[in-house]
Length: 119
Image 1 (cartoon, rainbow, N blue to C red):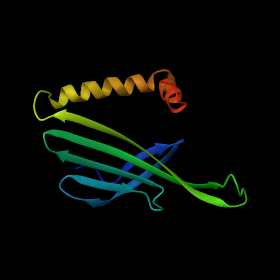
Image 2 (cartoon, one colour; image 1 turned 60 degrees about the horizontal axis):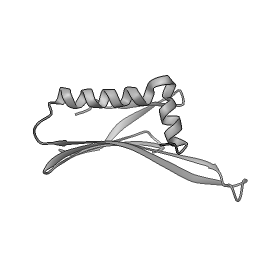
Image 3 (cartoon, rainbow, N blue to C red; image 1 turned 180 degrees about the vertical axis):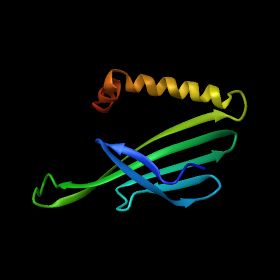
């Protein structure tokens, strides 16, 4: 079980996320105003799927009615989909570490390009 609370820093601001739900295979963490929610889950079948998901919500000016604020949200998640046997946890972590390092290289240049629609 993850520690409670979890912490995520967005735009230089740390958000404390308390565990608000948990079961044998999942947990939900969120801040007080629900603008940041993290969900962690595990699914077991022919393969094991582990999902870590963050949803961020905010209010911003409506492009059609700039004087009005409209709710917006975005979600990002990662999924590790592995066979029941054949990869140790250390081997799985090595693949994920390499991928995250690639995305973070050059201050996240690859992420910026990807979010801009490049492939």
